[in-house]
Length: 200
Image 1 (cartoon, one colour):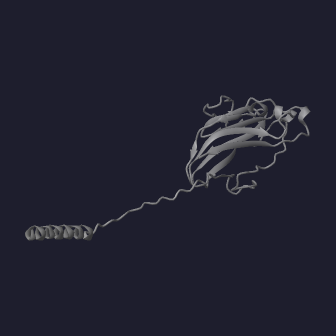
Image 2: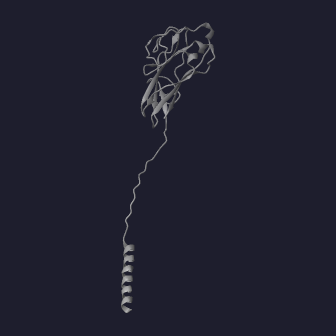
Image 3: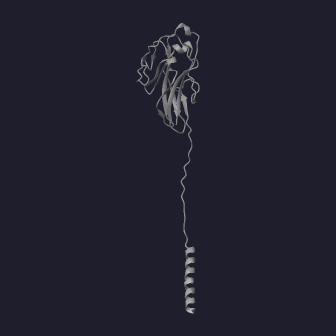
């Protein structure tokens, strides 16, 4: 009986040492973290006229070209507008629209507009016929530029579009085939606008 009791004490002592040993083993841990900051945009495009010109609003989203007093046959000349992406993401050009503040006026019915970008006719024809929004394609990289040329005219005048009227056609500079202004529009005045929409 004594021997058995001593044997049990020995087994229990070994078991106790095993428990102490299991709790004494160290487990090392570590972790790593990667962080990425996300900033939404901004999407920003501003307009510029030719260097040294007197156009208003250079470097803003609203550029004002010089006013013109029109004869019966006239042209504003092919005026180049530069779109500059000063934002932080690429700007995709998605829409273009020609507009005016007096679309139902006699003058709007007699003026013609030629708009060209990247050598392609965006629109060439009567102002009144161009008053719609159309889809366009192009992307301006961050810090990059794109341009369009706008010419408001009447009569047989030289424009970047010439006689080419098909939207999407290659522009061929030459003489327009638009009629001259008639007496019914004398004294009328309006603004012609080009609005480009972007996404990013």
